[in-house]
Image (cartoon, rainbow, N blue to C red; front, top):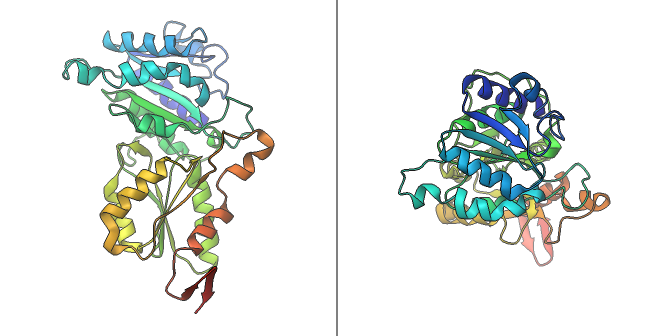
Length: 331
C-alpha cells in the first residue's frame, strides 16, 4: 500500500505541475512510512518539501496555495498530530466554497496516517475519522487495499474540493498487484469485498481485512457473510449498504474507533431508517472501547477482533435458535 500511494503521488506530480507535496518529514527522508520516498530527489524541493512541525501552519499554507491555483497534498504524519490544525480544517478548509458561494474552489488533500495496529506510543495512534465526517464540506476517504490506495488518492488529488485522506497505518505493508489504469470502483462508491446472503458486515480502512477474516471463519460455521468496504466515509454510499442489508436482513458495523458517537452509530441509524421492515435483528456494532487510545501492550484488547465480530454475528437472533433469558439455545 505504501508503494501504491507513492506511485499515486508520483503520477500526480508528473501529470500536473500544480500538484505540490509537503508536510512533516516528507522530503529527503521520504516520510516515516516511506510513502514519499524519492519524490524530492526526482521532482525537486520546489515540488516536494519539508515544513516546520506546525500543523496549523501546514494546512493554512495549503489553503492559500489552493486558492492561488495549486493542488497541495499535505501530510500530518500521524492522526493525533493533526489536532492542532483542526481549527484550520473545520473553519476554513471545509467552509471556503460555501463562504464564497461557490466562487472559490479548494482542491487540496490532507493525508493522515491513522488508526492502530502498529504498537504506536501516545499521540501516534488514534481513530479520528468521525471528527472529519461530522464536518460538512469535507470529503473523507480511507483505502483498505493497495489498489484503492492508488485509485482513491489519484481521485482525491483531482477533486475540486478538499479531501481528508485517512491511510490505515497497519495496512501500509499489505500486498496486492496494482493496476495504474484507474478502472476501479468510483470515488464515492462502496465495494462489496465478499458476497453473502445471511448477514452484512460493514467496515472500512483497517477493519476490512479483519471483517474478511471473520467472514471466512463464519463460513466454517455455516453463515454466509457479505462484507462491504465503505471506502468513502463522507459522502457515504447508502445505495450499496441498503441493497445488501435488505438482501441479508442483518447487519454488523465494525470500526476500531470508540463506540459512543462513533461512525458506526450513523451507519446503524441509516440502516435502521432505510431497512427497518427488512431487518430480522437489531443492527449491531463492534468497536473500540470508550477509553483513550491504549498503550501498545493493551492495543490488541482494544481493537475489534475476529472473535468479537463472530460473537456479534451469533447475537443476531437467528431463526434456528430460541432466545431465552441470559442467552440463546439451539432450537
